[in-house]
Amino acid sequence: MNIVVLVKQVPGTDNVKMDPETGVMIRSGKDTIINPLDENALAEAIRIKNSHENVKVTAISMGPDSAIKALKEAIAMGADEGVLISGRAFAGSDTIATAKAIAAAIKKLDSVDLIVCGERATDGETGQTGAMIAHYLDIPVETYVSAIEVKETSAILKRTVEGGFERIEVPYPVMATVNKDINEPGFPTLKGKLQAKQKTIPVYGPEALGLEPAELGLKGSPTRVVKVFSPKLSRDTIMKKANGTTEPVDELIKFLSGKDVI
Image 1 (cartoon, rainbow, N blue to C red):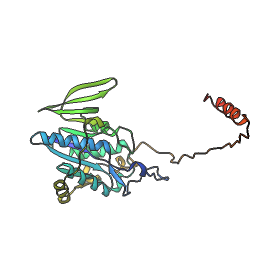
Image 2 (spheres, one colour; image 1 turned 120 degrees about the vertical axis):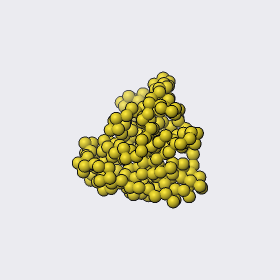
Image 3 (spheres, rainbow, N blue to C red; image 1 turned 90 degrees about the vertical axis):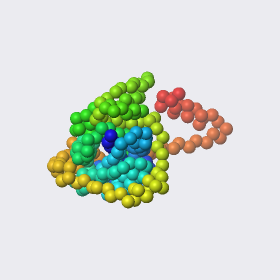
Image 4 (cartoon, rainbow, N blue to C red; image 1 turned 135 degrees about the vertical axis):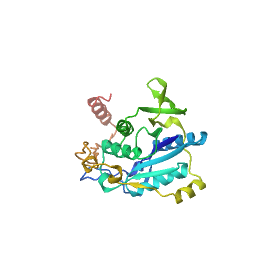
């Protein structure tokens, strides 16, 4: 059984920066982490690998060269291989261009049975990429997955839906986007770190994926960020002294009533 896990390297929550000229997120900073929900996806793939025979887990990421760090961490956690999609041509890709590139990379692998990723990423919060990858691969996708049971020719997936859960059986290959309820991610082991250090991560560029320049980066992204700005907070403070009168309280009540607060 071959499982692919999509691992995205994202800025730390307090370290998100945007290029004011292009509207594109800056991803070259040192303060980066694996997208938290992708950690859940990785942990689930490793759990399946550890509880079944003949299971191979391949982690795929798209980003700058620094994303190799995330793939090495995935291998240290228990993944077998890592693949990086990288190159200047991919810069500025929206969810559509990203999905095309990742789908092309998955097609280069041996027959893939199960693809797992986080339901969304903390940097974009769109929740679109997993479903789009499934579209370009022409396979079914199940979202908000909170449990996975693998069988010989199909997977039984537990989905979180409004008011409860549903269980569905889907034949391979299938894409599952998982939520945080599926598990608690573990930590890399010393043995895993040593194995990751020795691993060579192949890097796929546009030519290796067979994609045209018009399909990549900003050229292949119909989504456009028109303007980036930081909101400004302004406060007009009114100071009143009581001086033994109720005038300030009366004015406060009048002010709050005018704002429909009371």
